[in-house]
Amino acid sequence: MRLFIAIDPGKQVATEVWSAVEKLRDKDYPIRWVSPQGIHLTLKFLGEVDAGRENEIAGTLDLAVAGTHAFDLCIDGFGAFPTSFRPKAVWAGCEASDALKELHENIEARMSTLGFPPDDRPFSPHMTLGRVRRGGRVRDLAGDFEELSGFRSNSKITSVELMRSELSSSGAKYSTVHSARLPT
Image 1 (cartoon, rainbow, N blue to C red):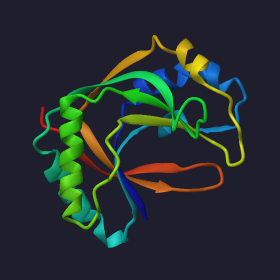
Image 2: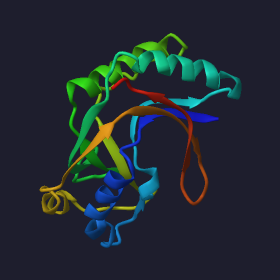
Image 3: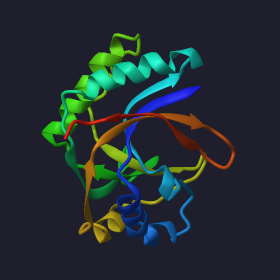
């Protein structure tokens, strides 16, 4: 099974983000958009994992989040990877608070003890909203993002999710395998 560790911003914030990019979605760019229910902040992608390891990973995730108290996640701005001039993915940015950075570092450290190597890229917290379709070309999106510059939303984060991703031709479907509660 394909697993990852993520923060679910909650239905209200996901709906706000989805609504904020409505004008961008309406422009008919060759982008495959994530459904509002699929909006999340990935903290660690684990990849294909044997089904028998779910409990081991869930227990280690519980240990990783034990030192991080519930915190506010601020969603602030939109952008694209690698750049708005040559986008491959469109995202909503998340403020890299001390709590979020510490949580990410704890998860990386704990998951490495299970054989999941740390990510070699710097942590850039974001929620992927869409990916440019293979062979698709999108012009510079900087002007579109400028129109969205006033968007800001907050979510109280009280848990971290171990998620399963099932890929299909209609897009990925996500389900929660385990929810690790943050102390309040």
